[in-house]
Image 1 (cartoon, rainbow, N blue to C red):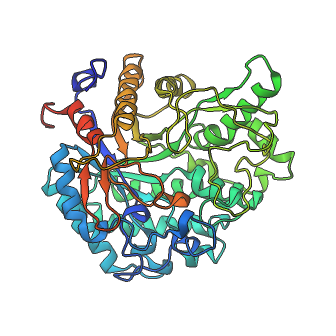
Image 2: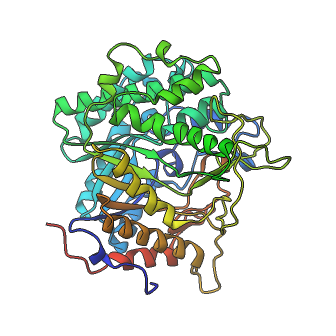
Length: 475
């Protein structure tokens, strides 16, 4: 551990240290135990949707190997494990509840508790039942009510043991990348459907929060992937406006309805300019439902975004897209002209820049911009690099190690500046199915050999664990 990396004493008492995964990325058993297609199972069969034609059919076989994976968590000393439940496993085709699927998560939760690890459950990490997509998916208002019913059924089985409930993970991805850009499942490139999906995600969140609160849930939140939108040239009005637009479509269109009870007026104006009127999507009473109080806000952050309103020319890369050979569109509805110049910083294997101080800045500014901000948890932060298994059988990953430790330090600095951050979950526990990248990119602090499913804790995992080793046991 580097000398400038904070120890657990830099963090408040009770600070939670954990790691995170998502069902579709790790479970496998994609058509076992009653599970039917999710949108990602179906999307993976579309030619050129996923690099190398990879699928989540087997993934890293967590469905069968979860006990061993929990043993690894315990070896690392994690306080908490953030996982998602699969709607397509629990309610195949969104018909009746599948007892086998629910039993799997019940066993997972019991094993976590037996190991002294806090279960942190996410209800939606992008695996909509394909049958629901075929009825309109998130572009349909009906899906929000279907989600509420799914959430209630999960709570009925797990609510006696799970205390922390996240409704959605990164709706930017499932709405704008899935329905606008076409790079994520279901692979649609329909600007109106993308904005409908944004709103219906919000509505589903609010409906679920209100219903779970009625049933007795006490720790309810949502997770957004947020960025710092930085104008490429702060003296150029075109670039300044580009940063406003990006901040609107990646941050404020998600934060404002939940925390302010309204959509940002400037974003609504940008959408009207391309013929999309939020007033025709939002029904009376929706925003009151959506802005129901939450107990925490999850923050996922991997990189800042330097943005311009000027073209960059041929070969320019949008860091939010994955070139797989299929036609794609910009996810930024109404601002499709945005470009993303480089500012020359080091970059990960995802071609995302490395700038830990951006995380400090983001966490601090959220508290300034939203006076009613609930406690924050870093629910995802991590990096993909091209790992190599050394001759000693270990994975020495100094770049990922440095990335994690620098970002943990940035969280400590943010807390010192007044940010109310109460936990940090590294992404990801395991190498896994990385969406349109397939198995081409590795984020895990534990390496998975995809041929044998053998797990190996990487140096980064050991270094992460060393940060909080020796902390007092939770009361």
